[in-house]
Structures are given as structure tokens and as C-alpha cells.
Image (cartoon, rainbow, N blue to C red; front, side):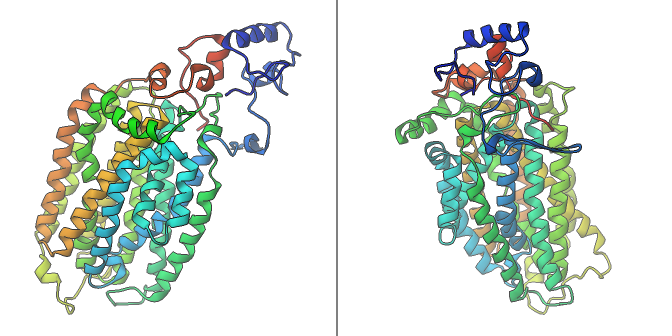
Length: 503
């Protein structure tokens, strides 16, 4: 899959590349490689020609080529910015911006029920149809089948975010995505805030929904701009490990094979389940129950803004190169444990102050941002947002630390989104049945802490410092020569395996 060819147009072998490298060292004017000399390239063969692989520099600003991992990550992040980001902004108001959350609860139960079923198996579809085609399904059917299409979108997104970057930059890629995606939540939350800033009502006006529709349509169009995964080339010339010739049979069997090669992944399933379990409580039991619409809108802005901060802190910290990855995994577990006890402990103190029965009447006077005592719950809600980003960034990082194989990571992403959505479907149904807020809160805190305990054996014993390329290729029909970094091919050193990207 390298662009280097001989005079007959045939791709060379690793031995041929080594011979060419020796020739280049003797004669810098050699034209064995495409258009640049080896000196200009630093010994690395040029990318294929065409607009898709052109890079640009504007002073100190470097724009990577269109088919590079960073560019593709930004595209999928912008798609999620416009679509799920707007959905999150609306959902974050509590009750989708209405006084009574029952209708929104039932709609979310239906959505996440289909999402959970199709999400669990979406990795099979993504591997068979390709990551770009999976997003086209999202575009075509999104209007009628949101839950099904969301499964495809989020599985493709997860595979891109975890398999496109190098091992050393996975934390930053997760962080970049989560920051851009949640900026959609911030912008989306500003719409109802601006529309309702002078309102003392408990529901949004029609203009709010129109604004969301316009931005979502833009996101639908962006999903078509992704390139096929096999065209993506990293900075060092390496490619994403995929299946060259996937079939429905190979990918259905591949779903089963994941449990044979990585049975320990099931220990992360409780963390998957808990990752959105708390949404119905934080959005409805916290935000909608206690605050009027303009304050709910402000809280919503602060929640998603705090997610951006959380993603930045955790994503970049996880790429710190001075600590072995296996040790970082353990430190991360300890950090999540402390945050779970501290933040949700504060939440318990707040939740003791009110019940569902007290806040249910329409004439209940809800808190405004001008009310005495607002600052405390405002910061608590921000910490909930920070924690949300920390939890989900960590889950993606743990999955990405287990393998670099795009096919396997698509299945992991499918498991994650499927089980996560099952949790959402359950909790939104519980909320629709008017369960006591304290019961909902207790289930959140208990599940989060319990899932960390269950995941500990995997985190403490199964996260490697690096994954050899040969191991990633065991779950693929590609060869070393087709996906390895150019330096490994030229030098013949298989130890040079993992891609690098410019930060």
C-alpha cells in the first residue's frame, strides 16, 4: 500500500526497498521514489499524488492532508458537533426543553433501545461496508431511524478515533474529538439560552427547535466528506490495519472471534453500561427538576463546556510520554475512583434537599440564576460534566490501549455504544415511571463505583505498554508490507511499527 513502484508499475518488496535506500544514500539525485529526493523526505517515500494527499503550511500553521488521521478526525468530530451535539444540547435542558419530561423519556427509551441492539452489532456492519459508508447510512436514514443510524455513526466514529492515531497520540485524538463534539453541545445550548434569556417559563419556544434543525442538516452533509479508511495514511507512511476483503461471513465470525482473542473486554462492559446511565438523572432529576428554563439553559452551556475541559485534561495527560502506558492505566483507575467518590459524594449532599414529589407540581417555584444558593449546584453540575468527559475519554483510551487493529476496534466501539445505550434506555424508562430521584442517584453512584472494581483485573493486568504490529495483523488479512511505517520497510526493522502524527 506504499506509493513506491518499479519501472513496470509493480509494488516492491521489503528487500527492494532496502536496496533502493542504499542507492539513495550513494546518490541523492536518485529518482527511484516519486517526485522528492530521499534527502527532502528524510528517507521516507512520498505519499500518493493527488489533492487528497497535499499538505499546506501557512506560516507556523501546518494543515495536514485531507486523507490524514487528524483531518478525518476533525470531519467526524464536526459531524458529531452538528448532529449528536445538537441532540445533547436539547436533551441537556431536561425533558427536551419541556415542563414534563415523560414524553422525552419515552422517546429516549425507544431511541436507545434500538441503538443498543444495532450498536452492539454495528461493528460487523462497519467492517463490512467501510467506515465512510457506515456514515452514509446515518445520512440517508437519520430522519426516521435515529437509534439505528446513531449506532452506525458512533461505531464508525469510535473506530476512527481509536484506530487512526498512533499509540502515542490516542489520548489527544480522543480529546480533540470530545472537545469539538461537545463544543456542539455548548453552541446548541446557547440557542435556547438566547431564545429564552428573558423567560421565566419552564419550556422553550419554537425558535429553539428550528435552530437545532438547521445545524443538524449541516451535520448530515458533512458525513459525506469522509474518505475510505484504506486511503488514510499517517505521517510516517503507515496505514490503518483493516480487512482488505471483508465479507458478511468474515465480519459476523469476526464479532465472535473478538471474544476469543480478547475475552477480558467483558470486564469493561459494566463501565460501558454506566457511561450514560446518569444522563436521565442529571438532565431530568437535577436540571429540569430544580431550575427554570433560562437557568436550565445556562446550566446546559456550563455542563458541555466542562466536558471540553475534562476531555482536554484527561486526553493530553494520557499521552504523557514520561510514564509507561501500563502504569498510566493504573493511575487513571485510581483517579476515576477518587473523582467518583468526591463528585458523587457532593451530589448526595445536594440530592438530600428535595424529592420528586416536591418538584412535580407546575406551580413549584424553580430556582433562577439570581436565586440565593445557586452557585453551589451550578458548580456541582459543572463537575458532573467534567466527570462525564473524564469517564468516557478513559473508556475509549482503555479500549484503544488493547489493540491498534481498526477491525477489532470497530467491534469494541459497537459493544461500547450498544451497552451504553441499553443503560440509557433502562434509566429513561425508570425516570418515565417516576422513580424517586434518590433511587436514581444511588443507582448512578453505585454502578459507577462498582464498574471500576469489576474492570480492575483488566486494567491492572491486561493493558500493555505497546501492541506489536504482528499481533494487530493476526485479526486482519493485510500484510506487514501493506501497513507498516515506511521506515520499517526501508530499514527492514520490524520494531519500527507504530505510526506518528504531528500534534
